[in-house]
Image 1 (cartoon, rainbow, N blue to C red):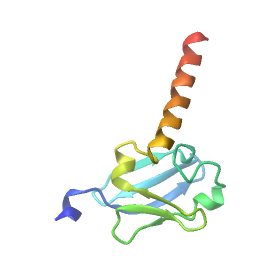
Image 2 (image 1 turned 90 degrees about the horizontal axis):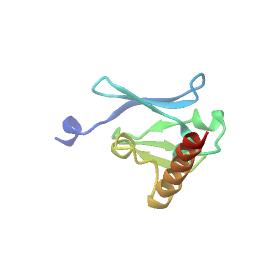
Image 3 (image 1 turned 90 degrees about the vertical axis):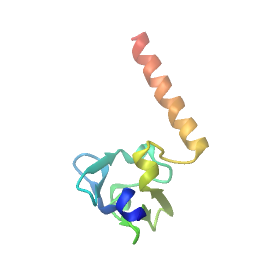
Image 4 (image 1 turned 135 degrees about the horizontal axis):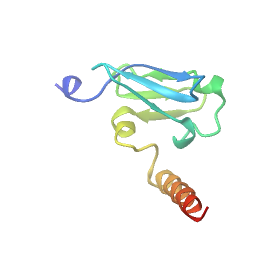
Length: 103
């Protein structure tokens, strides 16, 4: 039942040209995000990012060498890490927006 209602990844890969992780979902859509906003992926090399695996259930992504795991439902909801990580990312985004307003 959940498999039919919840988003499941069919495949995922690191897009070298765009510099983003791309997830192809089973229902036919795709989703991409820059790795620097995801906890456990920031600062990783392109080679490390390219070693992404989809979990057998299709509900998550895993990077063995980085010891990083991200859930598909969370990613689609805009959650790229734990609360502390997200607060840090939010602060960076707010600083960037404030800097643009001043300029």
